[in-house]
Length: 90
Image 1: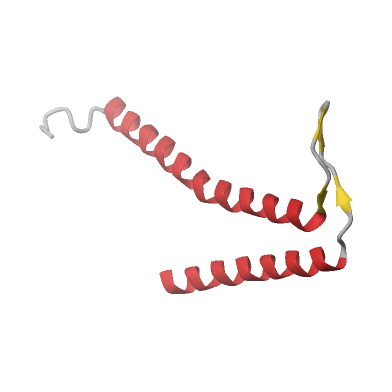
Image 2: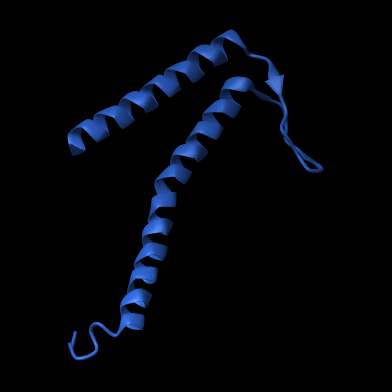
């Protein structure tokens, strides 16, 4: 099952990179990003898309790590509240 998951993940990532490459070749227009009062330098659309995709992949990789940590802390607290393991030494 892990092989299929890795294959599908690689396939989706390859399709996304290919789409970004095709779009950047067809559309070399310079764009600038605005966030609140900040404005970036003008960059080609392909560079902006590649950077955004990279940040998304890294964020998607890191996000499950935080949910596992918070989930394990909640499980530990639940066991402590129940007193289920009061007489067991760890």
